[in-house]
Image (cartoon, rainbow, N blue to C red; front, top):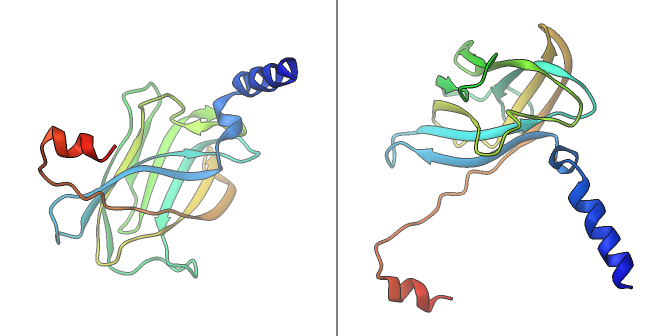
Length: 165
């Protein structure tokens, strides 16, 4: 029994992390610049499905796939890695460019390295259309839902925090 359990654990540990990743945007942080400002910065990485790509175009859409009204993409950033860049294409679309990555890989693919987009939005976006391309030729396009959960913070003593656990 222990031998089987050990074998299963070894196999799981040996799998590449990207093989376990879900295709689509994976939002790791979101933050409103000031409460009520409607200016949000989303920090994320994105994972491919069964295809290779070197460009990712993201457009904020509603549940019906229609471009979300009242959105203005303001800026984007990429990690300081060779071949990475981004551009704001229009009010609702941002593009990321990177060296070709293979199936089931993630962009940027390194721990603690993320993409960001800052936007003004009248409504909280919860869905994005991802269009993956290879040298500008569309390879795959799909909508991804995501959630931005605000984290409440407050001042507290260490003893109060410790008592919660």
